[in-house]
Image (cartoon, rainbow, N blue to C red; front, top):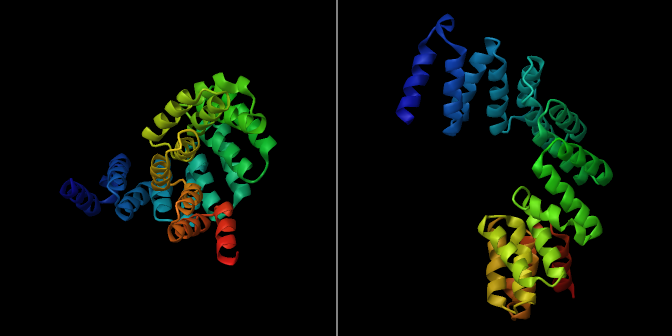
Length: 290
């Protein structure tokens, strides 16, 4: 495969501009990008973009973003948008978000929604919620859900559950469980709160088996609280940590401390605090200064 890519790249590099088909450049650039060769992909996309190909400009932005060359990626996406490539809106929003230009990111995500990119519109809802604008975020999520997006509908159900703990949301959480992992975790919360512990366990274990990071922490809590099985709880917390669920550090630390492993507990509190968990940071401070 590498030899094939190299041969194709050499042929195109040796060709005169008038003999090159932009589509061939784009196809090769996409194959190179898939192989992780972003610099070579950039060369192909740039040559096609210089020929005026709008899709090439979009792909050039992707190759530059993959190299974390954010400002150059923004310029490429803007060229693509000017040429009528609506798919560039969402990617532009992501890059602007990485640059810290949240207002620009929101405008780009709104552009994505207006162009019919519902996933881009949902990114706007997430960004608004992260900025504390919960009502505006809900309005956007409901707008996207009304367009038929099942993930957005699941997000709306989750946010409503978090705000109200209304058991009437159970059908919506069930419907959204396969589209938004937090909906499955919230469904388990509802089931456990209503006394259906066996089904709650089944729901959480299904989420964990599917690799959903948000399932591990409540699963560990279930094992610890409902089953009093500390070994299973520890395994779940460690599974969550491996899946990227930073809040599992705190609960694992508490479990280790209760077992008398204070060095292990301090390590987990430190890891949780470093990952941004304020609860872990507070517990670590109390241990160190208490």
